[in-house]
Length: 197
Image (cartoon, rainbow, N blue to C red; front, side, top):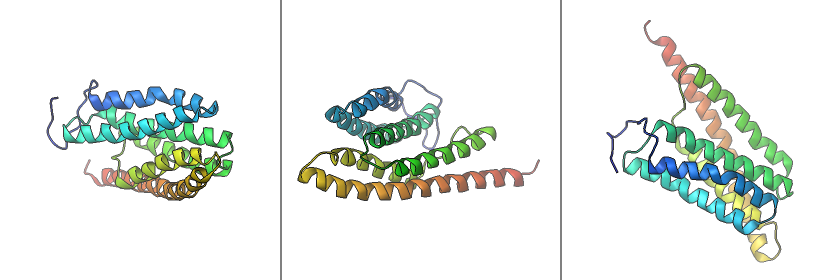
């Protein structure tokens, strides 16, 4: 693997991290089909694989200097699509109430507006920060546990308790991250206005 200078972002497309992100994206429709058709083993496997590859693509990109503009776009898109697909599937199967789905979808709409404003001002994306990653981490742990909670027995009962714990932390952090992205964008816009013309 070739590396680039630390702190730089390349325009390369064919990298291992980008391939992992692309695989995650391609698996989203299969995952949605699995969760809606109650093939929970396959759905759990795909969700766990998504979490592992999400970690690996970032780790590989940072370690080997393979951070790219495409990767900065693909990674959050894959995260959001898994979250949306899982929310829809869990809501459809009545494992979580639709109002929870609404709260998280509202955050997606909020972020879409933030990103639209960023793009209109020439930024293709905003730097990912720790709170956003922590929110995604919590939600990606919550979803498989909530999926397991749809069964019966002590495993389902334990999964329900732990899953909702992760879910509430994830929901809170997801909105905090969205607000931080908006503040970040506001700072970028303010600094641009103060630059000499």
